[in-house]
Every structure is written in structure tokens, then in C-alpha cells.
Image 1 (cartoon, rainbow, N blue to C red):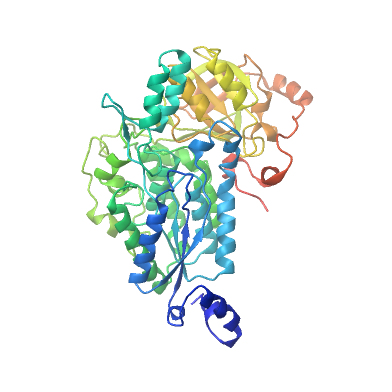
Image 2: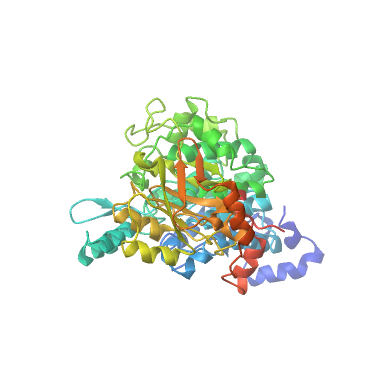
Length: 554
């Protein structure tokens, strides 16, 4: 066993003495040591219940004959970090989580790992670590939050909360109404209740085969989540015994399956950052270009919030991720020969799956659209691509042409939006918010929510080299690559320039001649970096562009 390096032989007697200091016994040191990577903390609502998940996992490990040992992982709440400097520290934690987990697991040679993530960057960070370390590993997330409910019976969620602020600034909602959302939008522990980034990634962890059925959808407060955690703890012992590693599961075919499920579910655009970064750790190239090919043949089957008015608990009751995959398999859109952590192939795992609500999970013959939830656009404004959640775009905005309203930061833009300075037809451009320029590639949920809350989502587009929350809806186009700080064309856009967007044909163009753009480029000067010290400064020097997954280069 891997743990023999610290438990066996006279040369390892000093190591054993320190394990004895933990209270471990001679008998326990003959069993597999399982690292339980717990992301529990008391500031993230999606993580406040992970101590319960952790204990359930440990119970499962002990039941199956292993010795569970908890090690910590950090996590940021994107919602709490939103709208201020804290959001610069969201995406960057993905690599901190992967690196620190690698350090802990290499320093303390566990025989297997159970990863317990839940929120946005925590899930991909631990998946990156799993691929990099490549020892038997399984995931069990903390589960999604329940939907909220207002006094009038309307169900609600975090995206409604942010849009309420925009409605307040538009004069269509008073402070008392906003406070009702404050008190009811987030009623329980768990990752926020729509198909936002956390739930998208937890569903795709299941789709790629690294978690048991139900991982993405069983609500956090339910006892079924604890039972899943116990079964996960038991299952890691089987993976250790059979030496089934992440490389056996996270294959190229499995990543393509995940992207297909992504399109069917209508996941967050952040998946277009995370899946390539995880694949990179697995030594697999997952080009952004493939997204449109997969989207072109993958029907969109679900419209969960923010695209619709249903929530994760509804998807769970309808049959969960397995039911969606069962629909996709009917048309041969998935490679069902791939292995999963259940020990079964995907085909075997889906044999008992059932679509229990064909209103919520549309049958493959009757989708919301014939193409997937995400589109990658290219043109002179985004030579290397940009991303939009097309399933959450008004039909009126699938094609749009309008004048650019240019801002060099989120703060500049939000002031003008709240002041009523954005008019129907405008294209809001927010730049220097990319991986390098931010640094940290902040989510633009406040500006997009303000636009929606003011009733402009069907007549105003927003383009940025930053990114968006999974809670964003509307013609919100992010990840523009190359970014402004890398000299991308977005840095050359001037107030009033016309921008043409054609989501249907995957096109985005700045309607300025090549000659004029070259003149602007010849006189262009980069602004001073926003951050010169600390982790963010180091991150800015190492991070790649968004189309490459914003991975750190060596």
C-alpha cells in the first residue's frame, strides 16, 4: 500500500511514532489510510454542513475496514465575495486548492481519497488535484440548497435576490420587498439552489464518473445526503482494493460525456473554464472549439434557474443527472462504455435510471432546443473565443447590434447602470477583468443582475473578459480571449463603436475596419497593473488565457 512508506519497517519507526501520537493503534496501521479532504468552514453556506458529510464518510470508511483521516481544503463563497475586491480571490483559489491538496497528500501518503467539496472553485480544484495525484479517489459533495419561498408563494433563489437590487434601483421594488428576498432567497445550507456553477460542477462530477448517483442533486438538508456519504466512504475501499484510479475514469471519452451533459442541463459558463483545466491535469487536451460541435448535436433538456423557474430539488425528484444521461443515451450521444467510481460502466449504471418528470427533464424527442445550453463565439473581438449561456438568453437577443458602452472595471459599469445610464440597444463592455487583468477574472453578476432587474435583459448585451456567475442570465458574453490585459481587441474598443452579436451563428464582431484597429493598436498603452503584491500578483504572472481554462503555466 502507498501508506507502507510511513507504517512499515524499522526505518519508518519515527514516522509510526508520530502516527501513534495521533492516537492510531498498531492494528489500525495495518489497514488502508484514507484521506478525507473536507472543505468544511463556517463562512460558506454551501460548506456549513460538510462536517456532517465528513463524519458520514468516515463512518462508511470504517464500516468497510479503512482508517479515515481528515485533512482540510479551503473554499470561498462567491456570493459573499461578489461585488468587491473579494471576488478577485474566487477563481484563484481553484489552483490553491489543487496545490495544497497535492502537498498534503504527497507529504502524507494516503492509500485513497474521499473529496468533500461543494461550492464553485472547490469542486474543480479538488478534481484537478485528483487527476494530478492519480490515486484511488471518489467525490461526495455537500448538496444543493433548497429553494426559497416568498409570502405570496413564489419560489425564489439567489439570482432573484441579485436582480431585486436592480429592480430597486429602477424604482420598481421598494426596500421592504428587497428585504423579503434577503430573508427568504437562501433558506438552508447547501450550494445555491439553481443550476449555478457549484451545482453545475457537482452534476458534472457525477457525469464524468467520479461520484456516485445523486451527488449532484440530493438536497443538502436531506438524510439521503448522509446515506450517500456513507456509501461513498464504503466505496473508496473497493476502489483501493481494485486500484481503480482517476486516470481509469477521467478519460477523454468521459470528458466528452461531461460536456454533453453540460449542454443538456444548461450549466454555468464557468464549466468552460473548469473542464479544460481538469482535463489538463489528466493530460488530456480539451479545446474550447469542441464545445460548439458538442452543442450542435446535443439538445437542451432542462431549464433550471436562472434559465427557468425550477430548482435542483426538482431535478433530483425527476431522476437527477442519471435521468438526463439516460435521455441522451437514447440517441447515442454518450460513450456508455466508460468506467465510473461505482465500479460499473456508465451503461450498467444507467440501466435503472428513469425520467420521472418529462416536464422538467424534456424527452430527447422534445427538447427546449436542438442545440446545447452553451455557445462559443468567435470574431475579431474574440479571436480565441468567448462564451455565452445561450439557454438563458432571450430569443430577441440571439442576434443584436448596438453601440459599445465601454468601462475599464466592474465598479465603473455598475455606477452607470444603477444611475440609469444604459439604454435599450446598448452593448456594455467591461474589460481589464480577465485572468491577468483583474487579476482573478471576477464574476460580473452585479452588472448583469442590475440589467435584468431593470428590465433591460431583452435589449442590452454585456461583453467582458471577466466571467459570469452561473446565476447570470441574458445576453451576457464572457471569457473574451485574448483579454484586454494581453492586448486583445477588447482593449481597443471605443465608446460608440458598433458591435454585432450573432449567437446562432457563433459570431461576435467589432464593426471597425482593420486599418482603424491597427491605428489604435499602434498608439495603445497598457494601463498599470491593478495589483503588484501578494498572491494575486504572482497569479497574474502565471495564469493563461480563459480559452485555455485559466490554468497556471510553469
